[in-house]
Length: 543
Image (cartoon, rainbow, N blue to C red):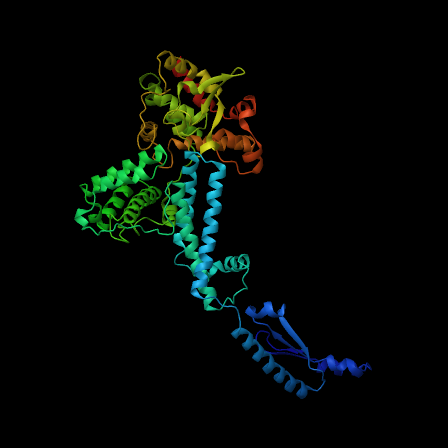
């Protein structure tokens, strides 16, 4: 019979007595030297010692056909090899805590230098930096959420780090390896935090990251919160839109806590009250954004010595990204019947004369599949004509104009035939003749941009016609338009260009220069977007 013992660190024997007997019964004789190779022993090499042996198992012939003799020789060889394993483990590569810290510091310096060189070489605009800061914030939040997990998930990364540094591999069961995994995890999180600050324009002295005041002041004698905020924005210059939104939120924070306190006297209870205020009518994502911004002020105040070291009452209050995803407000497109009910309602039709800003901004979002803010911030000069095709330019070049994704959102869109039929160009000419710079001069920019008032009006309008689904908002018009274009078979790259989305392909993001393509091509794509029932209702009202 043939028997194999379990394979692992234990010894395995290969017995072929039955095979030998069976062969001899058939007249096949095994004689001479070949029979001595019939008994073998094999040992599994421990993972940490395989670099010494360059193999997974050690095979050894016992050179006997006698079972008892084989068992004895196997035991002797096993004792010998296990002693060798023990000796090698005692001499295996190790790292002291200081050596680990030095390696991690070297890795951090290299990573930060690479991303800094990238920023210098690509010359990002302010809007690009804001977009990248948003991405960095997501990655940083992910890293913070992994703090409670086993850092050994970084095992392959630590192996690669040791190879990059020209160091021998470490045994994964060794304490040094586990310590290095923890240190690398903390370092990766720290790098992401530093990158987030740098994308926001905040640079610190990494060799002395906790610059404190030489004199310790009493909490009641610390500068007031508003004064700290003023100094913070003066030293950390960011885009105008980001600063405006943040300063507006800090004013709301002071309203919630009741007074402009010395910053070192603001308590966690104050910050918790602000959190509850945000969550009354805004999303968990907004809560994360605003609390993180507030926490940044306290962190900076600590660096300046305005609050005691380690004092940050916002710490631990922001919801996790996982919690935010559970509460995210879903958006869905309008069904054709729902859309007709809204846009053929007497309230909306009356806006053409009583408040044309609302009328045209909503229709621009519908037929141009642009964002609310892209329509609301248009200048009169952004409407033009090329080769007989009227167009609107989406850009951030004008005063107070911003774009969600920077250069990717810049585009020239042919004006949809429905808007032309409804008299949009006549409205543009009326603004030009009136000497207006902005196409919708009655819209004033607030913390939520130019179009906030239009968005709120649209929500009231939707509710007034009996639609109570919270997923139906002004942005749903853009969702529906993009969905219809894909359904009509318009090429994905063209839909991305019309919508101002970052292309998901190399051809779309690198090799396609949409500004040099004739407007006739995007016009044909955009004209696949049709709402005949809506057009009929709007034209009947006009005439």
